[in-house]
Amino acid sequence: MNFAWHIITLIAIQMPAILGYNFVFGKGKIFHFGPLGVSLITAYASVLTLVHTQSFVLSFVAGLCAALLVSLLFAWLSFRLEADGLGVISLAVHLGLMAVVLNSNVLTRGALGIPGVKRMAFLQSVSDFAIFSGVIAVIAIIAAYFLNRSAFGRRLSALAEHNWYAEAVGVNRRHTHTWAFVIAAIGSTFSNFLFPQYLTLLHPSDYQFHSFVFYIMVIVAGNPGSVLGVATSTALLMILKESIRFIALPAAMIGPVRLMLFGAVLFAAVCWRRDTLFPPKREV
Amino acid sequence: MQLLVNALIAGSLAALIAGGLALVYGVLGIFNMALGQLVLIGGYATWWLYQVAGLPLIVSILGGLATGALCTWLTFEVFVNPFYRKHRFLPLVTTIAWSMILDGLILLLFEERPRSIISGLPEGFILWGAHISMQQCVLVSVTVCALCAFGYVFHCTSLGRRLRAVVQNTHASLSLGINAPLLYRAIFIMSGVFAAGGGIFIGIDQNLSPTLGFTYTIKAYAAIIAGGKGNVWGAVLCAYIIALLEQLLVGVHWFNAFYVPAGYQQTVALLFIIGILLLRPQGLFAHKVRSA
Image 1: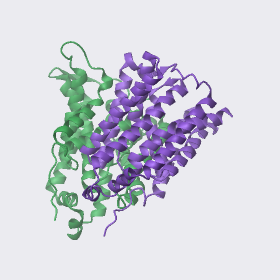
Image 2: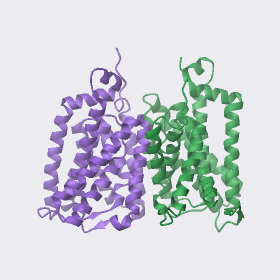
Image 3: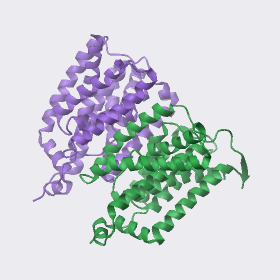
Image 4: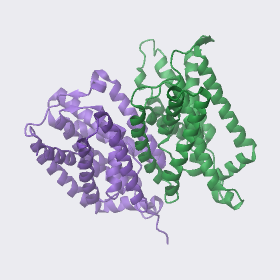
């Protein structure tokens, strides 16, 4: 039963961050490959504030501010670069932020991570966490669903299809894309405020490139831009990810096998969605 | 002086990888995110042939290059060719998937231990006050020769003219009877051979480790973006500039007060790119593309 609660908690904790990122990559087709860079800084800002002030409110606010700052940096880069260049540079920013975290030993304890992260008083058991994060996830799904169908969602879709045409009919690209990054930052704040508390540990290895591939895989498999599709694929792929540990393999093989399996799933998802992932521009 | 020599060595490695890749970007307009893993495959194949199979070094190096070429051809046929005509950004995602699969395979086959193609400490000598090994001299010379040979082919032969024609305008070159699809494959495979050469360079000069792949991919693309996408020589020059900045960052005793920890070295490429984007978003050496 505990394992079921654990799976529900992981799915629910990741949901706001993935749904937020879905607005950037899935709906907006913005090649922002650094969401884990945002998550990394959010989590560290949040946990370090918690450690030094013992205040959960301040910790959340610090996480939100950090997430917004890094997201706005990515938004600025997206306006300066072509789509594929942004993809590579956002990965580089992620790598750079990781280097800063790993080398600022005095502040972050480097590769050791920060153990003993305090939990909120009402979140002491796994089931508490599952219920609380589940409620947050449901709220995130509802909010994302309505945002997706709002004028903002339509503007984002129009820009994704052809930004010149969209701008010609009055859609402000800078404004719309900046809001997409802000939504992703808010989602990331909720996820990364809860995740270190759930583990009672903040470790940089949870924010590596491979974790980002999970995000991409979820969005591609769940139909980019679709809130319900991405929510469903988050649940299914998280179950797949966590179930691998039950396969009778030597411990040293589980990591590489998981990498290969995720790579294969991502490739299969792209093959399946090759016509809809980047739909051709409509022409008159 | 030692910093300059180190920058020359690191820059040659990065230039080797970035040069072929810049041409691929110029022709196909795609990024191959599995590049770092192709670098490692060239290095590990050479290591296996030399250290495990016991073949002579030259044969092992040729084997490593051939393995890199084969793997790159597979990358093109399975992960790029079926997708890039539908949308040029699709291979960016498919090659990320391929890089994951290759990462897993490399970890399974070669484990996480560092591997060196030539074991033992290399013999070195002092040149203008800088220490350099014989192997490093050979590696830098071979890289410079390879880049010069590539430059000669690219600028002074009919094959080079056809390549440049395809880079400038694929449809116009097709109408002039140039077999563009064949050249696509040739260019893509050539970039893989250069990448495998980079892997062999790492395996001889330092140690191969499965975690290196991603870092080299990012550095190569940083050089391409800074150099002006599609400009081969801009990418090569920027690879050397980034290497020099990396060496200066960690090698200089700043304000006679402190050294920057070596772990920050890889952030240099990032800061360099951000600086260039502020000043010149199209890249340092971007040139205008002719269009009809």
